[in-house]
Image (cartoon, rainbow, N blue to C red; front, side):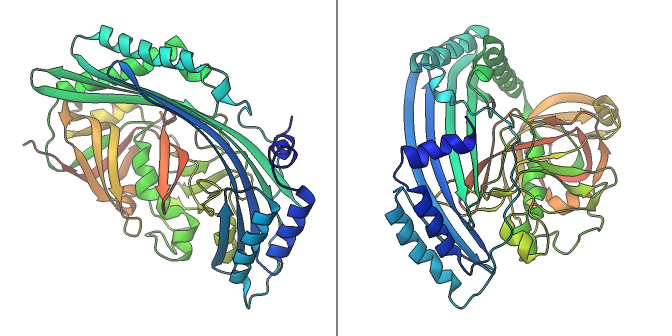
Amino acid sequence: MSALAQTDDIFFARGGLDQAALRRQVDEALAGADDGEAYLEYRQSEALAFDDGRLKSASFDTSQGFGLRAVAGESVGYAHSTELSNAAVARAASTVRAVKAGHSGTVAEAPAGTNRHLYTDANPLGLMSFEAKVALLAEMDAYARSRDARVRQVMASLAGEWQAIQILRAGGQRLADIRPLVRLNVSVVVGDGDRQETGSYGTGGRFAFERVVSPERWREAVDEALRQALVNLGSVPAPAGEMQVVLGPGWPGILLHEAIGHGLEGDFNRKKTSAFSGLMGQRIASEGVTVIDDGTIADRRGSLGIDDEGTPTQRTVLIEDGRLAGYMQDRQNARLMGMRPTGNGRRQSFAHHPMPRMTNTMMLPGKYARDEIVAGVKRGLYAVNFGGGQVDITSGKFVFSASEAYLIEDGRIGPAVKGAMLIGNGPDALTKVRMVGDDTALDPGIGTCGKDGQGVPVGVGQPTLLLDGLTVGGTGA
C-alpha cells in the first residue's frame, strides 16, 4: 500500500476528517498567501530503559494532530491542534488568515512529487514483543558485566517510533511519507578504587529493530561502550594550549554540524546573522574541503523521502573545494532569497512550523591515509569521540568536550587523555584544515539536532582531519 493510501486510511477513513471539506478549507485559508499547507501527523513511540540490573522505565505514546500554515512575505501564521476534525481546521484557518491582512500574493509553485522509497514503511514497534525487548536489555546488562570485573553499572535503552504524515496544499496536491526510526544505546561505568569512568555507544536508523538487536550488533555496541570506558579509566589529564588536532572519522562530524552546518542554513543567511552571509562563491575553507548535506541516503537517521513541506530531499553541495557553494533551504527562505528549496524544510511535529534544518551533513573524503596524517604531527591531540558542546551560530565560536582523545607525540598516538576541550571558531577552523583523510564515515545513527526549541533526527560524518592551531582546554601540563 502506498504512503498516500496508508495516510488516507489513518486520517480520513478511520479519522475524523472529511477529505473534500479539508481541501476546500485549505484553499480558502491560503487564498492570497505566498505559501502554506496543512500538515497531518500520526505518531507512535516507545522507549524502554534498563539500569543497574532492572527495568527502570517503559513508555508507549500515541499522538496525532495537524498544523495549518499561511506564509505572507516574511510573516508566518501558524495554528495547530490535537483534534483532527474539520471544525478544528476551521478554527485554525481563522487564526492563520490574520497574517494575510493587507497582503495579496500568489501561492508558490507546488513541490515536485516523488515515488522514491528510502526506507521501509513497516511499523517497528509491533515487530518485536515487549517481553523480548526487556529480555534483550537484561542480556546486554549481563553480557557487559561478564566482560570485565571492573564494570559497576550498565545502562541500556531501546527506542522506536513510527510516523505517518500527509501534506495538503492549495490546489489539491497531497504528499505523504511513512517514517520508521529505531535506536539502541548502552552506557557502561567502570571503576578502579575511587576512580570511575564512563563509555557509551549508540546505533540506529530508519529500519526495523532487527538491524540493531541481532546478537552480533548489540554485543558490538556493548563491547565498544566498555572499550571507551576502560580507555578513559587509564587516561591522564589533557594538556592545555594551542596545538594541532586530528579529528577521527564519523561521529566527530558533530563539530562540523554544529560549528559550520547551522551557519549554512538559509534563514540565518537571509537575515545576515550567519558568519557566512554574503560569501557565496568565496573561499571559506582550505582547498580540498567539500561539505554536503544529503537527505537521500537509504535507511539513515537523517534521511527523508520528502521534507516536512513536501519537497523531495536531495544532495546539496554546501562547500566545494573550499568555496561556499550553497545553502540549505526551506520554501519560505528560498523564495525570499531568490533560490530553490533544497528539501531541508523540517519540523519536530505538527505543533511546530518548518524551518531550514540539516539532514545528513558530511565532509567528503580527501587523499590521505589516517596513519599518514598522524605521522606528520609533532605534538597534538587525536580526538576520536565527542560529548557535549556549545556553539554561537552568529559568530561560529564553539566549545566541545572530547569523550575519547589521545596525545600525539612524534607522529605516534600516545596515552589517552581526559578533560580535553576543543575551543575555536567554525569559519576559522575551516581554513585550518591541512589534510583530509580518505576514510569518510557516517555516525552510527544517534544524532538529534536542536534549533529554536525543535529537535529532529540527523546524521553527521567526516573523514580523518588535521587542523592546525586549535585551542585545547585541559588540566594537564
